Length: 110
Length: 111
Image 1 (cartoon, rainbow over the protein chains, first blue to last red):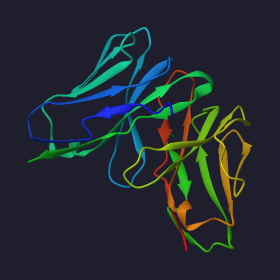
Image 2 (image 1 turned 60 degrees about the vertical axis):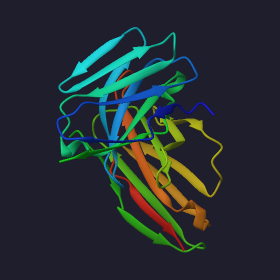
Image 3 (image 1 turned 60 degrees about the horizontal axis):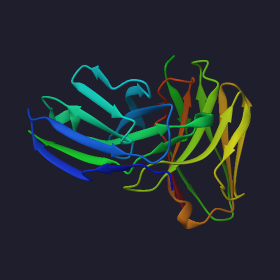
């Protein structure tokens, strides 16, 4: 399977704390994306980082990419209760084929 | 319009029924996708259409039949499904090099 692995599988933090999720993958990629999914709903695209980029910011989100280690991390700063969701990394290889990681379930406690 | 619209939102069907899931986008995206997601699992790719042509079929059983009538529409025809096919079916679209836009999904239950 080319599926990425994410850790931790579940994370529970207090509101205001930072949350870090990690993603490892196996194949070469064109870009890596992070998505959020609230329970039972569609996925929302958060951020895309290209294979020649090392770090990217979007609001309270910071994504890093290390292609030599085939890993990425997502940092959510100053978390809010509304950030409670599952977060998936997704690697994009050839032919627009997107493969999702196993996901991290984040709970932010008010 | 920056949305992907999926209908119906919920579907219950018997194992002998024939039904279709529909997906529509008007963002001019030329790639469209069907994903299947079981509870507490990541989405799994089923089909990719690029410029209205099927480019990827991830060894999906023939009881699932995709169709792309035009650049804005994507259908998934269902026939003789099994209870284990019950899942959330997600449609997405994209332009190359950009993030994917997902619909809110169809929750399918096969009885």
